[in-house]
Amino acid sequence: MKIHKFNFLQSAVLSLIFLLSFYANSRSTVVLENLYEEQNLAGKSDSAKSEKAKYIRGIHLSAWISGSEKHRKLALEFFATTELNTAVIDIKEYEGQVYIKVKEAEANKAYVVAIPDIEKYILLLKENGIYTIARIVVFRDNIISRKIPSLSVKNPDGTIWTDRKGVAWLDPYNKDAWDYNLKIAERAADIGFDEIQFDYIRFPSDGNTKNCRYSKPHLATEASKALIGFLKEAKRRLNLKGTKISIDVFGLTTTATDDMGIGQKIVEMTEQVDYVSPMVYPSHYAKWTYGIADPNKEPYKIVYNSIEGALKRIPEEKLRPWLQDFSLGYKYGKNEVRAQMQACYDNKIGSWLLWNPRCIYTRDALKDKNEENIFQMSNQTTREMLKTTGKQQQISQNK
Figure 1: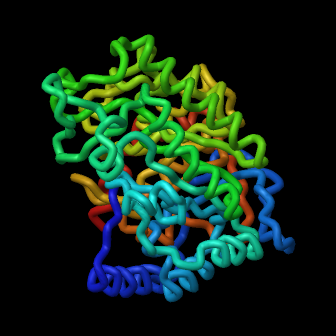
Figure 2: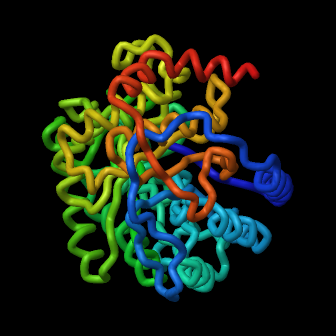
């Protein structure tokens, strides 16, 4: 899904951008009206232990952002002044870097000192009432796959298979590969994270996947069983520590009835976890998906259709989508981000996470802390919004 690898200069530049982004522009008026009544929003906890709010509203923070004292202060102020109450922190990335000390990661030189005092930081977040989620990329792993080839996906000739970006993958059927990732998850739980989020919990999708060879015969039914098996083992091990489990899945899994060629079947996977986060980024949908000519320019419609489809199949209390707060082929700003939030609210989903690979977020898209939320609009107006959102957003984007 993403990679966050910074050298010193990049980190310094990012610090300046984050600072400017945070303080730039006073709050503007709400463009999209609110559509239903939202109640009992939890505010900042006074307890040293973070308490999960009624609705989870979070942002992704890279390990490098989380390890910087300057960025920590900025992030804490961001949380203190907005509706945000959750931090999703990278603990293992798809190049294979591991940002917490785990014996196996250290032995294979996968450990990177990006967050040197992570226990202290997690405690600080909890003291400020922030729910903490450890993001772990599971099977896309360019380090361990090469250090221990027996764990990797292979080519027909026995060499290590790589995707179109040259990244190797762990074999999702291999239980030693499971164990490696679960030891990292257990360590994150011991550090104090409230929840473990598994990303890239799937089989490869990019590159010449016809050449992929696994430790057992590969069939769609077996692929799905392998992922379910991993999640069952994760649940067994993490439940002992009282830690919640969530997964990231492709956005289209909310309406797809097959495994999409990657082993992901949202209904079966959701049964094994506490929360599921489909990545409903409009920029990632092909033209004419759900009958929409240009999905990237219609964030409300794409997210609305995706969430509506998911709710026909999985419990609403487990649904917590990733929303797009980045530009890819089309400029995204306050209106586009809020349109996605509104699509969630119109489906009576109050929780969401914002993704930006550079950790730069649209402040004006967020409500102030404790700002009153009253969502009221007729069904007819909602239908009209579905018809006209794209045009309205294009007009306001050009202003």
